[in-house]
Image (cartoon, rainbow, N blue to C red):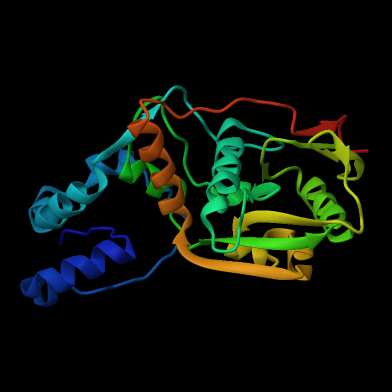
Length: 259
């Protein structure tokens, strides 16, 4: 008897698409483990299964392959600071200017490193590339925080080892995640002042340790998916004849190792 190991989604697709499969195959065991789904798996599909999924693959490719623009560099996401997280945070901040009620971009853009699930390569950037970076159903929202809550947020970012923050943030922490200093656009954060944060609704709900965001005095939710925010920005840059890119700016510095 021939045995195949399927991912759950592929198994369901095969059974739904092929009535004969329902009688030819029986499930004799179910086992689970984490398998990173990358393009390397494309060469592992049995030939007879390729014929079944071919029409679906063609349809998906037609959606994923269009080129949005170009990147001038390879960008990936790491803590405490990285090219990709800097770029995404900057795009969120800049794009927030179009949110109803906003007269200018938010004071800070914020994304979580864990939400950036792939790197962007140098050269052409496709729809599929952006979806791989931001595959979740997260939407853009703009929060208003008092300065004291923003300082707490910075402490939570430091405790995580760093997240994606936009240009103008200068956060220095020690190896134990304690804030040493924090400034915004070269100035101290004032506890009584209100600041706006462009971020994901996922973080706005206090997830990934960003509990301070739940203390927002105002929240402007949108229905715009983060991946669409990123794609729209890339398209706009391409229309201007520009490539996307990023740079390291010491936005978050972790001094020394854990004590």
